[in-house]
Length: 277
Image (cartoon, rainbow, N blue to C red):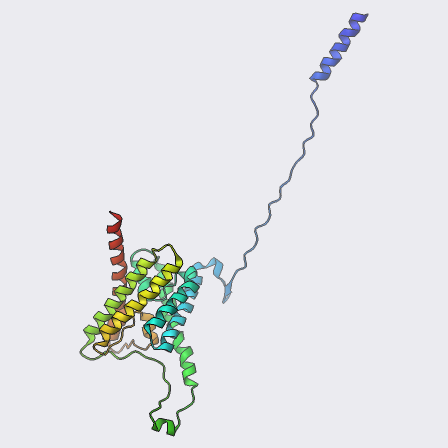
């Protein structure tokens, strides 16, 4: 009897050991947080966040308007224009690259730094911004009080919007070459400056680049009583484009654009040769 009891007890103990332990599983439910909605900037009902080209075009419009307004207000002083360009690059550089000049946009497009549709938007925005500067500043000039007879007698004249000097007859080639040279210098400075890693250095390089280009171009064109502009959009603001004559278009549009493309390509050639060393 004792043997049977021990056998049955041993079976129970072995069965108890063999029985699986009950485990309780807890389901963990993770809830993903919904992404925070970014505030969408709107302009005329269009979301700029979904239209980066439109946002960049608006930035180019505003920047070119401000640049043209500064040039009109200061009569194109090279030093002031240079500092104004530095400020505008800092303000809108992150939005569009702050081209503010068709020759820079076309030069960047020619060297494949910007795609065609964006370049077209930039050029249109730049021209419209420069034209808007005429409207705004022209309004304030028109609000100036009339000059009295006594003031006119001593030589005082009514205020007028600053305009570019007409191209001297017989000196068109000289002014064209001055514009081409100045545009090449400026575009080369821009192409070299955008390669710099520091944003502040890029802005200063471009600002002083326009100062150097305007100084050289103004001296060369000034020898024949001409004007250097280096910006086809601003040339519209200065009323330098006269469609009745071929020379203003040839000087302030064609020569300026060719100089811009030449400056970018010259920088590309120099950098490609330097990289081979």
